[in-house]
Image (cartoon, rainbow, N blue to C red; front, side, top):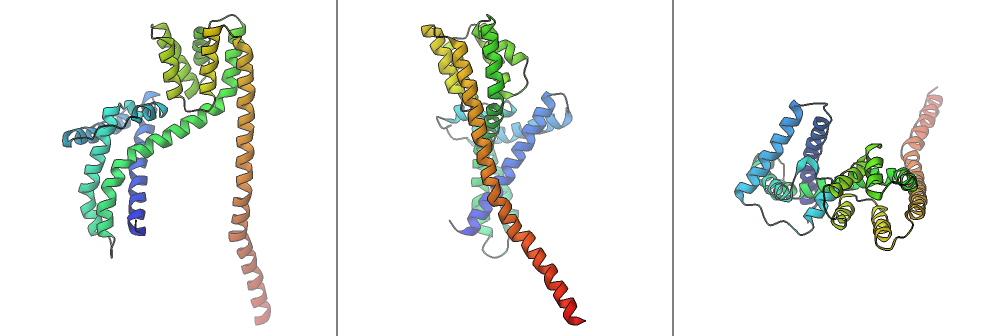
Amino acid sequence: MSPAVALALLAGLAAAAGILEAAAAVAAARASGATRRGGRVAGGLVSVVARLGRGVGAPAPPRDLGARLDSAGSPLGLAVADVMGLKGGAAVLGLLLGAPVAGAMPGRLPLPTMLALPVAGFLAPDLFLARRARRRGRAMEADMPALLDLLRVAVQAGLSVDRALAEVGARHRGELAREWRAAAAEIELGVPRAEVLRRLVDRCPAPGVPSLVAALERAERHGAPLSDALGALAAEARAARARRIRDHAAKAAPKIQLAVALLLVPSVLLLVAAAMVGTLIR
């Protein structure tokens, strides 16, 4: 792949993913009651693009698309068919918009731009889902220790696991608490517990969730004490969070040194050179 094609592809991906991010943000604000008109416009735009893709014939979805959509929290209320329609519609729009954009490009850029924009439109929903899943995973990982402690206290107080999940989810804000509350509601409605827990793992892309689900299954199947397991999981989650903070701090030091070397040192040298030149002129 030539640098021109790569640059055009990255630019198209960034633009399309940014549009989807903005639509998701507006939809979230609409859900919280912050805005109405903007939410309708964003949702209408996404639905129009999805219908366009379904009209031209969207391809068959990959097997893991449903799991990736669950990990991203089903943004904008999208289903698997909607995502594939959105991918096809974005590719068509990239092809239609590529002609005038490519005509304005200098040199050898028109053809790479014509090829890259439809590909970027088709891949942009995948990038959007991956970014949303990583963001949700980081937020859930940050909430995990506190929620595990609350769940342990609720279980020790005599509540059942389902009731404890519902109570903790209702008394805490955040993505992880919302998923716990939804899981407890599904179990109360009669959905099999094993299915609910499996979907909980898919919808919570945080490292500690599979261990939590395994502990809940062991407690239900073998009668293992759950409070001790929850305490150990909370301690492990805190240790993992501390390690992540230390890793971020270790990675920040070279970046600071690079900024000092590229910005501060040259500016000081320029000041010294200006002072020397002024002295010599005098």
